[in-house]
Length: 122
Image (cartoon, rainbow, N blue to C red; front, side, top):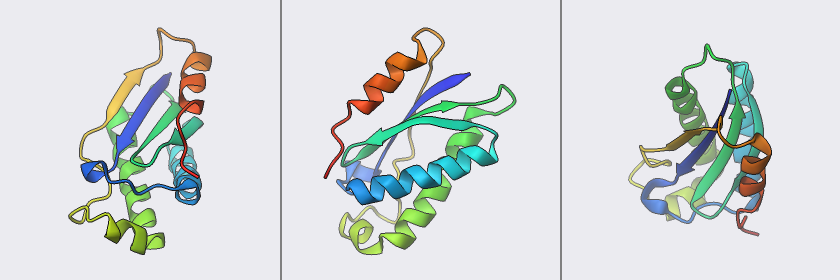
């Protein structure tokens, strides 16, 4: 099963640069591994990230999302303290909401291409 996820920073704060996105992707890969899932594609812009995740049917998307957002928030706030604090996000990294869409209708290659086309900051 595939799911397209989008996480937005709190108040759509422009926090991400390329270095931070690379670290976010590493964290997301590790979290997915813990769920026996695979991060197939990852990209983002200044204020949000897109993920294409292949996951087993036994995994509840809400639990996966909770871990992805919680673990990444912890490490990104710890490792990029100055950048995150300047964004003034009231102690939160991610917005509490998220977008999740099953990818059963569109082939995963189409979703991957869409994610690859995001305007990643330099």
